[in-house]
Length: 450
Ligand SMILES: *Cc1c(COP(=O)(O)O)cnc(C)c1O
Image (cartoon, rainbow, N blue to C red; front, side):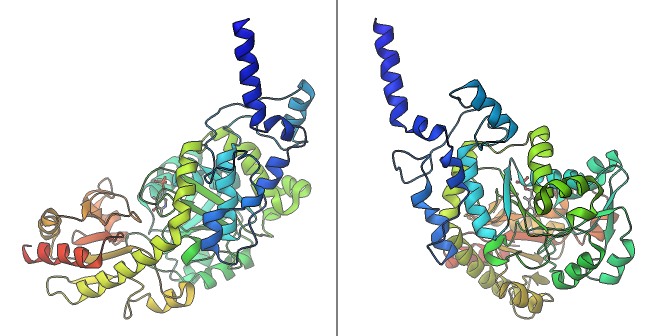
């Protein structure tokens, strides 16, 4: 009797969530895929999402609930079958889709203007899932030598073991890029700007070649995010980024995103030709979402999706502040006698400033680099810092500093490091959100003692 009563209580509680009412027509899921459109500015929409269209949030809590559930219940066996066949949109299993992750995907799609968005467990998972969807053994991709360390290793070691070849071009010289493209080229991949070199490629020129040769263009937009550089209508077919950096806001969690932009190229990819017959422009996304992503299993945890939704609420504010701090810090370093060279595309006079102005309006995020006399000088300087943290992340709320040659690139040969322009005197700094007086004060005192 007592047991029956508590079961009844649970049932009442469950129905108060409104889940059963929504169950048969799955309006919830349908509504999730509608971005908010009443607010003109992305900064507002990233805070609110679409408040009228979040029926999954039945208590009207002002934060998206965290659905930490692997599996979901169905009213009948028939309904379960229809869900598996894709005849109704429903959450079946969180490796495939999850309500909290889906809400993050809606907001990021709105952020970037992409056609589809798929969130995954890390930035590396975003890159590997995208490339595995495009490439088969014997295929190649073209990229630059200026790459995030693990991306370099993914291309050079992991993918090459499956006979997918990365060809390294000087992407500042588009003729050299064109020469490397052949019938087996499935992607051109680049970062904007590159890290830690802070090179900005002429995307317009590269996109024109990619269009002419019908090769998908993939941009890793981690450093700028869609706030500073919008890939839509720029000839970018696939945008990837690490949610770990600016999106999460303060390095709370690891995650990644794949954003698929409007593209005519899928029919030229042998692996996607059949999918193109079935799904047209959605061919890449469907193959990714229905096969590769599920099989590789690098799904984003609902809790991380929640933290990244929180991050999106303040992202534009944080990026504005960090851009301001980065530029002021670069100008300070440029005028310091002990600093040999400063890289910051936002700074007038920087080699890439003109391109930065054309592409982003001149704001280039939190990263800057500078050169001291030697590795020893870099270490003396870094060890004197009191507030700025020695660590590997960037686009964090905290200012962070690292000596790339001896850390991120420690497994690379001297020759490789030279090719990547990662010298012994190079320091990478990511300015955080602290008061500029504290950032400059810390740097100034440390340089005095260097
Ligand atoms: C951090 C980073 C990645 C990898 O992201 P994770 O979330 O750490 O896997 C990829 N590309 C760039 C440019 C990055 O900065």
